[in-house]
Amino acid sequence: MEKVLDFLLYKEDTPLIFTSVEFWVFFGIFLLFYSATYQIRRVKNFIILIFSLFFYYKSSGWAVLLLLFSINQDYWIARFIGNTQDPFRKKVWITISVTTNLLVLAYFKYAFLFVDWINSAFGTSLTRQNWIVAILPGHDLLKLDPDHILLPVGISFFIFHSLSYTIDVFRGIVKPLTSWIDYAVFVSFFPELVAGPIVRARDFVDQLVAPFVPDRKMFGKGILLILGGLFKKIVISDTISTGIVDRVFDQPELASSVETWMAVYGYGIQIFCDFSGYTDIAIGIALILGYHLKPNFDQPYKSVTITEFWRRWHISLSVWLRDYLYIPLGGNRKGNVRTYINLLITMLLGGLWHGASAKFILWGALHGGALAIHKFWCGIAPRISEKIPSWIGWFVTFHFVLFCWIPFRADSFDLSLVVFQHLWLPAPIELIPSVITQFALVFSLLLLGIVLHVLPDRWKSFVNQQFEKAPVWLLGIVTLVSIILIFQFKTAESQPFIYFQF
Image (cartoon, rainbow, N blue to C red; front, side, top):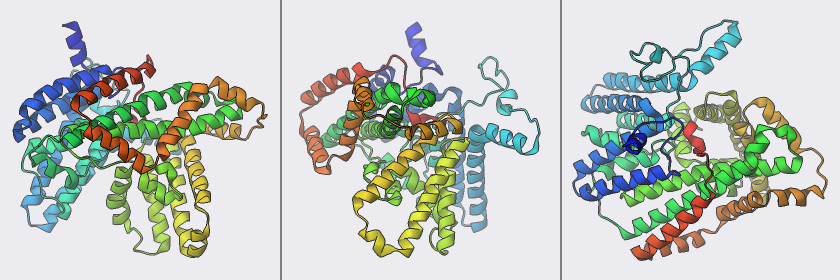
């Protein structure tokens, strides 16, 4: 009974994540209910909702109430927008939705940052306090700290889900759902709830009302994505993180230039394998359940321009920012200068979306500036741009992205500078073999991550076809053996997915 209660109750230090055994126990129990109800749409969606809310409770505790508030508000606002023909009333309702969602996001992610900025700018001494918790009756019983704002896991993702829905209803792109449960499933669908991809209503709501017919190919492809995602996260990302990246970025002043370069390359592979690994698992689980989620990555480190990189990296966020921010700002329709400004604003806000820190704003500004410069260069010298060898474009783009990851990963701006400085320290040639030998496993996984990233699509398609055609018993054996081997790399301390903090 103690173990059952321990599993059911939220613990901040042990969230329910894809790399934990507890999650797969949870998923196995869910499949028992799902397999018995999938033919009855309303019951099936109710089961998904209950398990999704429990999953989020296990991931972020009482913040599940905030998720329910967001679901309930935007469900009814969308209904009000759909039921009125008055353009003014439609604008009032969409304004309420956008304002409320952004205020919630701003409070939980940026309130303390704003207080610090005000105190720094005006010399005031405003106290940082969680006013919501302070006025909440019984917050001592719930063990909520009024001096700390606990950031709900994945708040940016489910807020963007809700916003895209109400905005699309306002624009007439989708019709409002008439079932609260169906809408709640769209927002809280547990595979992609806490770290994306950001699912658009136009791509998902029709699947909620369609009958689910078990598909052998979808099942095989889902298993392959799940195993590949676990391999990326546990074997490659976590091992590189603990083996070199954390050591160098925590104390960069102690690292040689060779170790620093390895850590910078390592973090580039770590964050890709971590985030794309989560996405692969999410898409794979969704496929097993009969839902198609759009890919979120398309070999981004093969890009030859920064513009191409953002068409391949975190695609769901890039498309969201384009459709709901860049284009409404004017896009490229109001002249070159306005286009450059719009790109910079979009990426600055994209950086701020990642967290309440100046380092994320700097990261967004660097990418926004690079996009604007690339746009400017293509405008003034299109023929020269076409003649530049693709490998030069790739080399510049890849290393620009890597250098931008440094302030993104470092705990402070000062540490970022130390990392940059140590990249250019003299490195005796004889030191390189010894460092590679010392970090042999990390170096091997770093190379493996790069190789897997650049594999031709036809190779991946071949492996995918084998999983789609394999008999169930063989899939079971492959899955069991793969899980056993993958979890041999699992560290004693849980390694949360990087994008959980966003």
